[in-house]
Amino acid sequence: MKKKELLKSPVRDWKDSSKEYDRILLVPTGTKHDSGYMHIAVIGVTKGDKEDTYEIAAYPDDISTYFPVNKYPTFEYPTVRMDCLYPSGILQYHGRGKFTVSEALSSIDIRFTPLTN
Image (cartoon, rainbow, N blue to C red):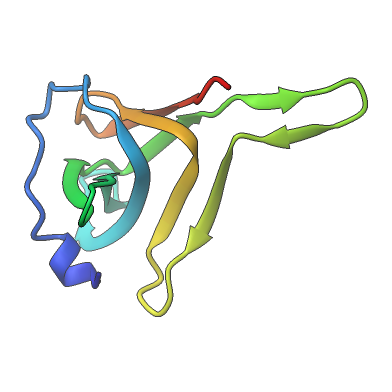
């Protein structure tokens, strides 16, 4: 999907933080927040049988992430990875689990819960 299409996605109610997503997209909006930083559209993606659904969870200017790390006696590895969709430049968080996004304020939290095997 292109940025313009994604930014037309439905917007979640600002206080509904109960939804879970399979992936998170971070899309710069091009608009300026009162802080002087740019708004970021945080878009939750839910995998469907035939197609994915997209929902704008928030438009913050600041994001905190809470992603656990898998720890073993001799090494560690992350549960969440980030890549960048080509050619749009949209950043994507993905992993084996579910993401949640806090209430849509100017600062938000993104949390990840890994699948249990």
